[in-house]
Amino acid sequence: MKSNQPIGIFDSGIGGLTVAKAVKKQLPNESIIYFGDTAHLPYGDKSTAAIQAYSVRIAEMLLEQKCKVILIACNSASSAAFDLVTEYVGKKAKVFDVINPTIDFIREHHSDDKIGLIGTKQTVSAGVYERKIKELKSNIEFTALATPLLVPMIEEGIYDDSISNSIIERYLNDPALQGIKSLILGCTHYPIIKDSISAHYLKNNEVVEVIDSAQMVAKALKAFLEYNQLNAKEKVLQDKFLVSDFTASFEHTTKTFFGKEVHLEKIPIWDELN
Ligand code: DGL
Image (cartoon, rainbow, N blue to C red; front, side, top):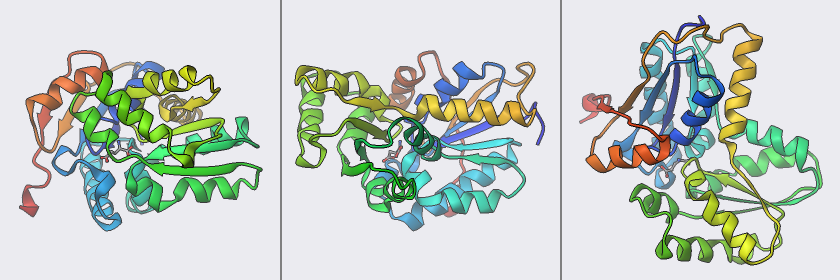
């Protein structure tokens, strides 16, 4: 691994751009190769085996692009495939997920709370957060709710109107989430609706901390690169934004997630399967 190699980041679609944005802010000299597997979106409804197969192939592609780090910017893929991707990549790159940095944050700041999680069906049923929180042996009471309508809603660009607010309310009023003190956004799409979620609690006079892992992941990555002297001294490569399927609406929504003009390039990584 060398400092001037890029950082590979992937998600099922454009949700992982919330993580890529935090990485760019913390590490402005780094070059990023972002891959959104838009041909297979959403991952949240796929089987574990399917997500594992996609993730390993994407890791292979990012290694071909000489990435020093592979950051799984997707909770569904982190839940289903982190161990497998780590084993597959071996010493060729460092693999990060979005779950472990969040668990570290919880260990430090929330040892006896009632904590809720919202995420995709895959993330909730895999139970990785639940298992890791149990391993902390703290007094945390943990509860999780699958919220499958949120990803398609956000990908459709519906995230700040009466429809999105009704869906959000409906989920947050679910009995499973009552009495929580913190809420983990267990999907990298959800930071886009963080303000609406906070507004719901404010309106109901409830004090609930909304935990968004993007900053924690970026900090963990920065600490790793600095400690191992792998941080780029200057920016040598242009950032690349790759997708496995292209539509104009992806490009449009990408700007919302990343905050600037982003040119999406289609890369035919699944063609051999078709
Ligand atoms: N953004 C992803 C996550 O964090 C996946 C959403 C999906 O494709 O279902 O889980």
